[in-house]
Length: 293
Image (cartoon, rainbow, N blue to C red; front, side, top):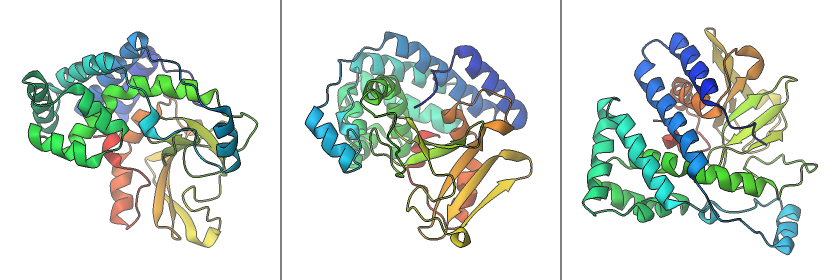
């Protein structure tokens, strides 16, 4: 399970430390810091209906190692998400030109009625790439940018749903699969804890789950000859584990090597240069990298 929600002070400290470590990233870090703070505020005013799962279906899913739900079963508080989308777009006006242009296109399309917020958010949770592409074209906005803004606007609703769904998981049952036990999404990053234990972090709902350390989470390969990793001497807290059996990679952050609050969303965004390196080497990510722009 994930740790308690980070505080504004934790976000400030993490952003400050990363600004020192990533010269030239200040603008992007400030935008993401502002967005995280906005999401924390939105979480406090977001309400969703209780999620109830069928007991017999839960038993079947546990036996078959199936996730509790699909992402299309997540409930979105549309008014709260729409207000957050507006706030994120306003934050983007002081960001880089690509962010500003995407934010302007989204705001204009929503204000003139070309696109409805409900349709946009439904396209995200239903994983409907066709609808998102159509909406992006109507807004004259890049698909990935639209997905980024929309997903981050519904994230408080997703977090509240995840908290409820986690109560249905058996804490004593191991989950060694390479997909989230809550929603079935692949991991976006992994974390090494204080004792060296490995947790995977879901790329959609951000649920954490324990897994084997010396195995590929995607294909289960444990042959040391086909598993390796790379890292940067200046950033030893991050390693990128690669598997030559399935040609996938996963970034990993060692909590024992950092002195800043560990916020997975920020760690994912601040290590995008490792994604670029892994992709150049011919490996693939298990998820769409639109979560960090």
